[in-house]
Length: 305
Image (cartoon, rainbow, N blue to C red; front, side, top):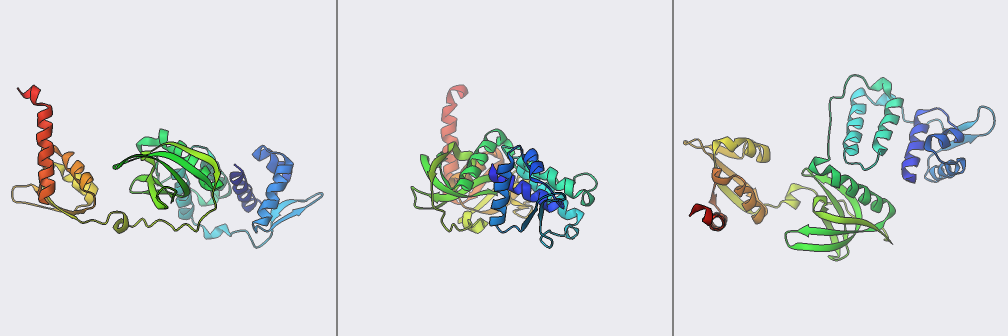
């Protein structure tokens, strides 16, 4: 894509004292005319590029604009590269890997030793996630309407949105955009999306707010949970709620307290523990789990008779 090439050209100009249009054309496998147009676009964007003809001429960035890379420590560069690797883990292209190579080439004096931080954002769904992210990124960049089928607790629906942000939060990926059906901004989980497609229909960009991703906003609480858990599931409670969400009772069981936001998710979560969890409060959740247990027994009654 053109934006990738512009970033690549800028990266080269920031690292090298001077280059030429033929050299850039060869690197990016485009014509010299295309490179000349790219240089014009960078100038229009406010990048102070200087061109000189003849022997000793070439393309360079004016003195004083380059960032003094001595302000970047080895730790700074390692963190930058770790972030790029994390994006590459869900990228449908090799763009981030190529950008890493450019940074490493120009900053070898700042990078030593082996990597100490590895981040993989792809989760279990890399095969289906990367293509969705690529489509959404393209729709955001081109300001095109995004179409997809969405699966939610309330049912399935066809959605059309103006996409503005790709969001990684709570170990999952989301897209934030203006929903044309709901006439409001919405956060959609990528793993619940299917048939994701960028349309040819353009939209005028709104002054879209950054989504409020605070736990208080997304998970407002409201359900006060009190439950007893078997000692051998302590690791799950610590992993999901932290080491201070329970206290050990005299018989060794774990008395658990938490604020929960979604009734159905709470019931589903408790059921994953089987006989190792007993809800004490609230009573309606306890009764709902009992009814589910009774219905489940009915399904398997033939095997018991």
